[in-house]
Length: 126
Image (cartoon, rainbow, N blue to C red):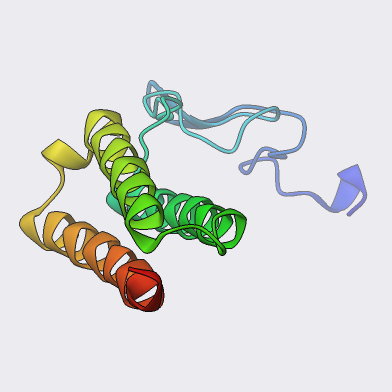
């Protein structure tokens, strides 16, 4: 819009601050009002911890299971138990201890189920 057609009561938000009384509500280089401070801190959520634990456990126990395919099943089960316990402790330390009860329960259930799958696959080698 050419300047001659612009209503002088309304400033151009691309070039001028937009004011509401004594408060700036917009400025050319920002879409946030001046009183709004964006939350820039990293705040992970429980699904990140849950997914991280699940994926890491699946990769680690699968690798152990395949690497020890010709070994006694008790060795595989023992190493997978240690790996699952370490991953669980790491997940709790990352922040799962402060998550909701549902996320805690889901994490314990999925990690237990994954471990039990390894146990079931190793039973024939006991």
